[in-house]
Image 1 (cartoon, rainbow, N blue to C red):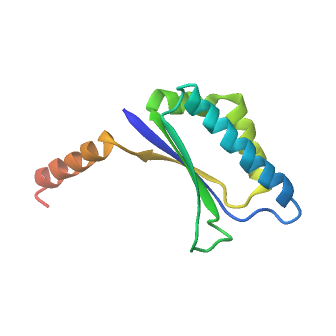
Image 2 (image 1 turned 180 degrees about the vertical axis):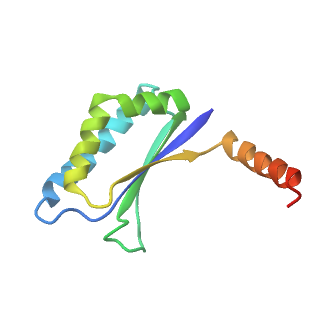
Amino acid sequence: MEIGLLIRYGKLVPGRETQAMALFQESVAYFQEKVAAGDIASFEPFFFMTSDLDQELGFFVVKGPAPAIFALMEDERYRTLMQKGMVLVEHLHSDFLVVGEGIAAQVERAMKVNAELAL
């Protein structure tokens, strides 16, 4: 089953903006390499146009087979990028996503539970 990984971040830490921008470029290169190698299915960076930009400046969406995403999170280079992120940007979050066929399965499961519970 394919899953997603959502990596969200807020504003850059004052005084560390240059390092944070270098980290962004390093992270994009890392995920693009993973896509090119076939390790993950897709990667896309986003910036918010509207939001509380202190808390939500941008995010990355990474998708791939669940074992590949779990392996990615164990990769030392990924862990180093996340460690850098913890000191260079505020509000760094990493979350798993239900994507693709998993969405239909989750909706079907919810409908079965609702029927079973007579909701």
